[in-house]
Length: 129
Image 1 (cartoon, one colour):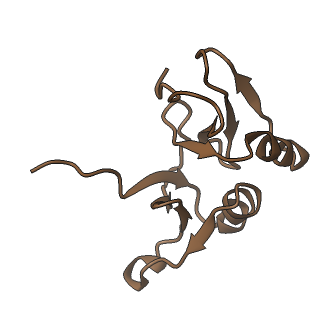
Image 2 (image 1 turned 90 degrees about the vertical axis):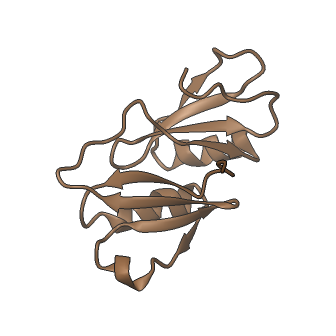
């Protein structure tokens, strides 16, 4: 028995904020929305495709954003995405602490921390640092 990899990552979101999630994760980040299976559809939230994995946004009450724990997305056209996010009113915080790694942090509309790592840069992000 051994772990093969990740199937999905889940973040919490407040109830009835699916439109804000679509605007951020779909329109700004460019992730494709997936239909939720019927038994789960009534719970609220959304699912997105992220390469070969999925990002699930689940309704949590009471809601509290993840301020330290976060997913890190590897990004092609990193500078273009950061410019798009900035133009969309999203605060982007660049981080050059790790040698050879170009990364930045943003927050989704609910305050969840999101790391963006340039796919053009060398090395891994050193998640959790």
